[in-house]
Amino acid sequence: MSQDQNEAPQQAVRDLEEAETSVDAAEDALGMAQDEIGKLKDQILRAMAETENTRRRMKKENDDAQKFAVASFAKEMLVVADNFRRALDAVPKDDAQNDTFRNLVMGVEATERQLLSAFERFGIKKVEPTGQPFDPHYHQVMMEQDDPSVPAGTILTVLQAGYMIHDRLLREAMVVVAKGGPAAHKVDTNA
Image 1 (cartoon, rainbow, N blue to C red):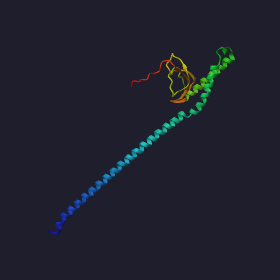
Image 2: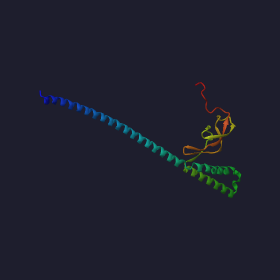
Image 3: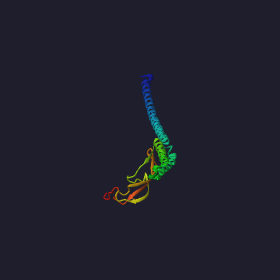
Image 4: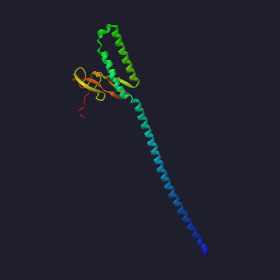
């Protein structure tokens, strides 16, 4: 065989080896590119999720700010509502004969109703806990009173009304609770 004929199969083998090396290199490059694409997809998804979480958090904070923006003003106005109620409670029932006095009382009652109506429009509601069990999250005990006819811890009297603004406590109610009487709820000591 001539040298040219001998070199042709060797050249073909070298070309085949180079092609295999080239295919291997291309497959490696493709694998690395796919890994990089996977990493970038993951980063994009995480960034999108973080953006969505931030958007939701900001929307909630904005909604809360709008809902509760009047809270400090409302707390100040509760004193006015309390004073209307005190004025009406202080009116002796037998003085209702005088027309001028009766008209004054009706005017104070109407003004109190308007104030409470304005409170309701802004999500402020009066809490009436008389007869309910004491809850330290919503009530402040001012004193205890013996009353064996009701379970201990039951609210007997409200000294100052409590108020809620939407789902939050604006001011806790100041109450008188019963002591003595049966326990409001029994605790299982055998557990």
